[in-house]
Image 1: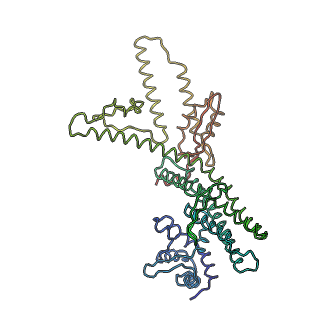
Image 2: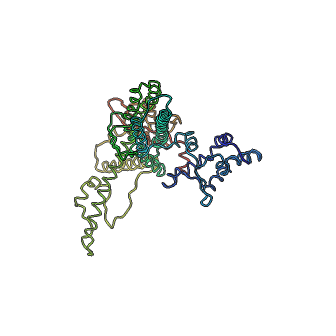
Image 3: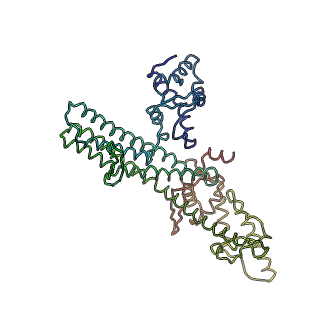
Length: 483
């Protein structure tokens, strides 16, 4: 059954969730499909069936008739529909409308997109400057030129406004992933690394080119194909827009000048929003650059080690191992007491895991046993030496602090756990000092998540402690980790 365009458009908006799923599937697919934005009929019908599953039979049939590929084609809502490959493409205004419902799904303008807009403005300027233009209100050619100028200005303003909204929406979503990163989970750490790389890509491929496009003082050399051949434009896009408006002003068309000025001011106002966005991304860009420097350093070290190893592979059974005094191990001398790397001693390092409480208990047990042994030796030697009162005082203080932490409960809404522990111990622990917070943290039994960018500093009695802000891990993150 045929359904008119208005009812079809309403059905698309009411059941846009099916289209959202296909758009998300395209955005997460390979580059070739992302570029074309084609839908497959089988995928479309599957998602459409899911979206209308809860409707009554009569209503469901009406919606399926309206959103069928045949009806979309009848209402000129498809660029093409290929029966042999089972693919179709929605018209541009419909794709833009669906993406505009959520800023995250909007697509930012890259350098080729901005170059295209630049070339359109440059070609428009050449049309306006043409000596063949008759600046007469009732002239048909002049009216067509005015309509073209408005179309280009409005389209540039619309696409740049949509571009800024897309960049802000996507960057906000990525920033939330980075700020809520859980370094104890490999999956979460991997998500954060991908989010940082995408932020860096958006900054370099979208934000910076957009700022250059909106800068009227920047000289950008561009070659434009025209009917008379190729010409070189040395002005920035916004400077070209100003020249178009100046041409109308020279011809005393002040009404058109006022209309075009409003569009120009709207475009220029976007530069403030993009500048604020860039400043907000600066901390994440610094994180990415620091990670890249570390990776480069590690890669250089590895390549040096690999080169030395390959150089010793001469087929002999002697002198094929790199000696420990080799210059390549110069930076590793600080770890010489941690483990001795020899073929006969291949045991693994035991790195701390979990809350660390068991390692504190083991340390205290070994310390007490050592103290008992030392006292026994001193007693056998009839030594008059006694236990240091400061050690006893520290042990009592540590026990008291662990007792306090056992009854301490962290609020789920606490934004800074370290600061909360500091304030708690300062009120209840006798002779509290700021370094005591490090031992107190070991008494927590709930996992914490650290912010990658937000830091805080605690000062108390001449001590200062700077740290990454930590809060309790979200329930959904904890469930995923245990799963």
